Image: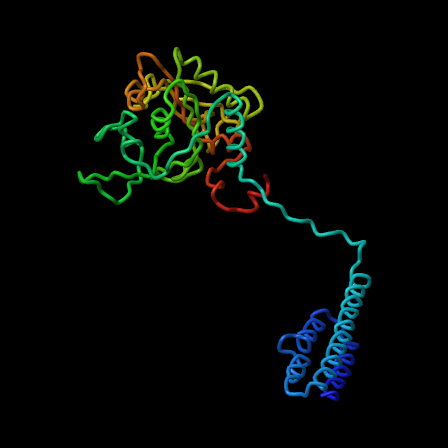
Length: 341
């Protein structure tokens, strides 16, 4: 056994002297000193020796193992020093580390949430898979109401006991209005940023899944003047300048009166482009004073309290803020597009 140990030592020392790569020295260490290594196999035979020989060979084996490990560590240091000093030119420019980029939708969402929380609004959330009651009936849109045809709804193929489709992918963030009123009561102010879904044709300014921020403000003596003030404050902060808006009559079953809010297209400067359908104006969303029936569904007395609500697509806000002409880019996963932000 003594001869075997000396032979292993000479063999390993000889191989170490010829090694030039770190991977080779690592492989050699495993081959001879690993759990199934050559030196380990020899030392396992100590149990077959007499007591005196076992002590002598054990001491010799441990000594050789230490010497081999010492040579391996020295070789690793040499190799490391060799490559760092000879193969690496420290004068060369480094490789720029790539960092992630926020989607412009996320950027605008963060700005909106920061703005509204600074004005005392709560940030609310609600289910994207919604019941027919909260998505329509609680918002003054009963069954067979013609306004349902405006929603282009994705119904879930599951019927209730009455044989009706009871679950939908929410067509707007407005269902959270009633949920919030039932939970918090009045007075109340909150915003709901979230995704909505509609079964409609996709083009430069329409998506089947889009992003909307719902604003809800309920208190005593709330009027359209309060609505206009909050809308103007929101848009001026997002675009960091005074903006031109127009408010015109519109119909939405959950508000009375109903209003449409438009903004001068910042992409074309009001001259007309595909994003604004060559009108110079971009429709931002619906607004109005909350309908008494909706307040009642939220367990709030319409004789005492009034409130306004509006829902804006914040993907359209992002389009105008960053000069993006096609809404489909936001969900395209195009890195060339995302790397600009």
